[in-house]
Image 1 (cartoon, rainbow, N blue to C red):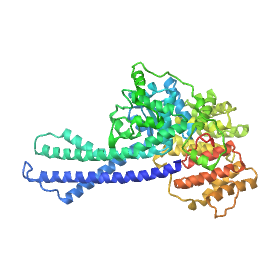
Image 2 (cartoon, helix red, strand yellow):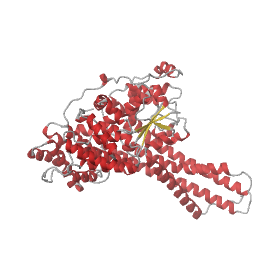
Image 3 (cartoon, helix red, strand yellow):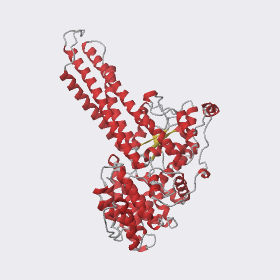
Length: 633
């Protein structure tokens, strides 16, 4: 199943979830309505022993059900609104501590390096990273509405009990949830289940606060008990919905993690440690049950119909068909020893397990790569990460230097007069001290390879996301102003500015970011023509070659509709076109990506500029493209 098919399936799952939730709400509302009606009937009775209880009036039942429906809806909307602040809010609610990008703690540095490498490899923004310091079990989760506001959290037990390979397997598993849009579904599910939970909580609080004696106490006790029972039915439905959606996706995420790292050993070893560890993947936080469906491992020991995860031994067997449970005995003795810890710091990535890159770029290959990075992508990202100059790495980890370093990427490297004008624009907006920092980082980037620019920019994103929203909006305006300082915008300036805009817009309004819409290609012909023309123009300086490349992509989408190639569009035109094309349905996006690759590959070669334009087009379509274009991961 490729990314676009997964998106269509996710949309179907969302509809199924909403139908199931609506049924659960209806049942709970009728139950509570009946309880309220019985309570009103009992309270109005003159018999103190309520011996003459009448059947509830239908009008009272309907009125009570309407009130409950309103309460559940408002509670769900309130919870979803709370979660709009991003995945970090979920991690913090569970006691998560944010990992500083500049941390020097060996275990945290290893965690950051693994997350950054996987983010670069998969074409996603680097997420926020949290550690659940009070949790000794081995677990992790990813949360957020969109990749730009995602957070990945791991337990302290994961850092202490897992080596680099094992940690890499767990993080790759969580990234698959980010890539396939599972996070958005999880966040919505949290909000909906919270609405069902509210009725149970109200009933429990009412029971605890009500005196047991007296007529009033007896009436409220009956009401509280009825709300608890009805709320428990709601919880039952909520857990069934979570389990139904979550279980199969865990197998898919395991398979994606193996495809990503090209080795089963790390992920299987992590699962074996969970199976042999006394604490397993258990979470002690009372609030953790809300995220049970998001976790890497079963955090709460739910079984049968309510299990949010497949049995851990079954997951291991899927990865290692010859696995025997008795082989865990020796591992269990080791990992349960109080003195057992994996070595601190970095361990060498086993590159010998990774396949070498090669092969030509084809539409089928790139479509298969979207949101499904492979081992070659990881190797490529690991090499990019490792070969970035040490002073630039230090700069992107420094909250005071990172914004200046990103602006320095936009400065013209050859024209000193133009660079001076760009620095003047920066100084006028943010002051001379920051402009001086930008000038310094421009000098430090002199030997940076073109293919390293976007990965370096990606590493700045975790710093930017901590800034206030108003500051981020001013920063986006400044990026646009710097790009236009010479009266025109070059390709890389457009790519970096557009990538930044997409990521920051999704960060500022994560609930509005979407994976696919409902538009059809037939309604977007002009926007498609602009994007294909830009791609043809980027890789073919000769007009006739560009025309043939454009026609190759256009005929793939509109074989019966003629269209003339009119040359490359202006960047503002392309900006508008990409905004419109992001509203395409998932199958249409797949066809569009295929057409872009046909246009790009028409002349048999792919330049860095073409690859960057394809990458920013895919990012604008919310179809993350892995780092190793055409590597066939």
